Image 1 (cartoon, helix red, strand yellow):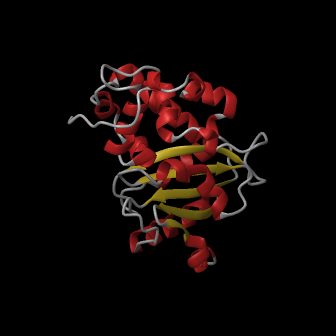
Image 2 (cartoon, rainbow, N blue to C red):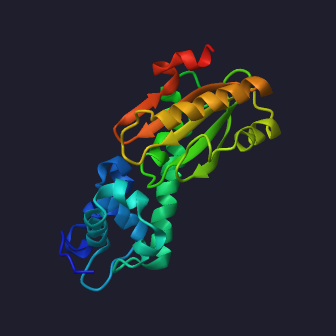
Length: 235
C-alpha cells in the first residue's frame, strides 16, 4: 500500500497529551477515533506512530463503518498492523457491537420495530450479502436469543419454514420476529419479501408459534412489513 503521511508522532507531544494518558485523565470520549485505535495498536512502526497508523486505517477504509466491514486478511496487510493487531481491532469492534445490542435487565423487552433494530442494526446494516436472522421471544416478548440462519438471496423457495421454526421449538419460544437486511440500503420490501412473510405467517399459525413481524434493515433506515402491510396478519 502507498505510504500516507499523517499527523504527529506520539513522542513529539507532551506526555499528558498522549492517548493513553488522556484516556486516563479525561475519559475515552475525549479521544478521536484515530487515538482510540492507537491504544489498541499500542505501538507504531518505523516512521509512523500508532496514531498515524490509526489515521491511515480510517482513511483507507473510509471511517469506522468501513473498518467494521473489512476482512481480517485485508486488515492484516496494512503496514504496521499484522495479525495480532488486526485481531485486537476486530475483537474491540465486535465487543462494541455486542454492548450496543445489550440493554439493562436479564432479558431485553421487544415492544416495537425500533426495539428490534436496536438489537441487530449495528451489525446487519454493514453486511455485504442478504442475511436472515430470527429473534426468539418468550410469552412476554422478552428476547431469548437471536439466530442467524440464511445468507444469500432470500425468497419463499430458498427459505425452509422448518429451519426457521426449529430453533424456536428447541428453545421453547412463544413467538418469532424475522429480520433480514438489504445491502442496497433501501429497506422497502420486495414482492419476494412479502411472499416470504406470508408463507412464514401461515406456518407459524399451524405451529402455534406466531410471526410477530418481519423487519428489513438498510443503511437508509428500517421497515416493518407489519406496519405497512398489516392485512398479511389478518388473513
